[in-house]
Length: 227
Image 1 (cartoon, rainbow, N blue to C red):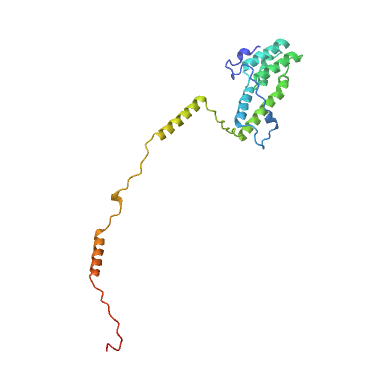
Image 2 (tube, one colour; image 1 turned 135 degrees about the horizontal axis):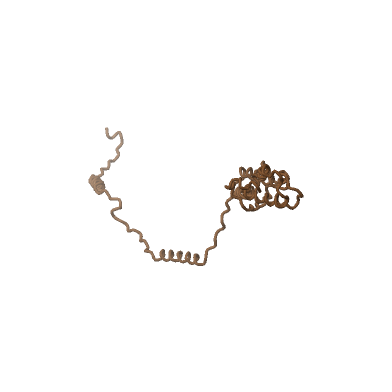
């Protein structure tokens, strides 16, 4: 190709090989933005990563190589130096795998050197579908929720763990049975209520004093005799 050397040597991107085909997203076909996203956000983001990779633009160096193959089959068209930029622009933003599809179609299915629009024709629908899918995935990402955490089922103990637990229980029981028995504390005299001896002695003296008086009995007399 006459003007290959005039193109910048620095690649415009890093894609030099066919990008991996993204995983299918069947849930996305029936999903509507007004509905709840049926998959967790982690699944959506994984799909976004894969579809972004599938739309990585092809390096212009590999585009030139593919166009050179078309020229080898159909011959270099007259005035190619003035047209080459239009053909490169036709593949601007197109992933490498679709560039290969378009150029293969031009070599094998067309009788004459194609125009830029004819080069894009067989890949236009697929390119638009990928872009539309990526757009819908990014919309779904804004509404998707994280996956619900599922607690792990309880793990069965190993025989060694069961034996260790049994040994610990046995040791605890033996320690309890071998421990000293606490005796009931003896009754302490210093904690008993003290008797007030002074009060008891005073009562006793009063009782003894009263006992010293002899009771004098008086005989009742008629009221008239006393006068």
